[in-house]
Length: 269
Image (tube, rainbow, N blue to C red; front, side, top):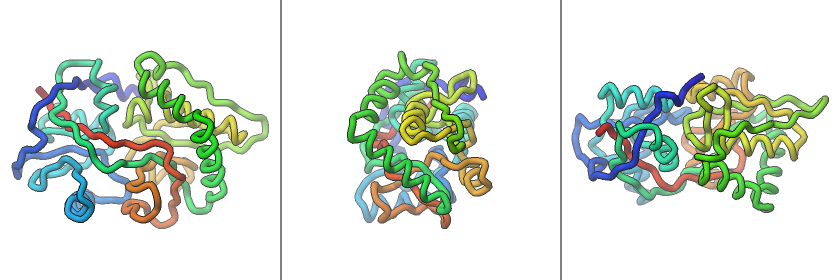
């Protein structure tokens, strides 16, 4: 799936993200188990009650997209005036073309990345948590972050070997490719980048055969529920479980392994 051949962005600054316009629409990647209306209400109440900004003006409209590619196509077609993305996604895509500019950068409350599992796979979740704790404590996650995120231009496209063990349990891991260079699918369709490097380390230490496959973001919940995937990528709104508005019944999350603190609004020049 050559998702990222047509994803093109460049970093420039303006003040447009603060536009207050009933017809001004901002594209966002769809949140699992949360409708557009629920997301809009969540943005509003978070701004009012928690005191942090999602960098979307209250009068602007929000439109959901199931993938980064479809959201970019909507921007090209004028369906949305801007799209909201994590900062490093813009930094990753900046090298491809000068067709776009970043209109604003926002510091916001951290959004945590975690893995999602069905409740019946709580033992697998606990195994992931145990290994993630080890990888944090011995500095491996930080090394992977530096190599595949900070230095993605030279390291992110390298083929990552995921170890295999004779007779070990086979676990299907679904990645979306919508957060390059974290969750990333190379132009030839090969999952790569930080998440795949992390999955490789988890498989190695837990002696699990982890098979990584590319899947559309909007299909993650269905893939998990149907058994087509055993592990999926998930956002956690908070570091603990006090407020996770989009986690459906029957789904459990790992401890967070990475967090996003800056988001950008991207528009056509």
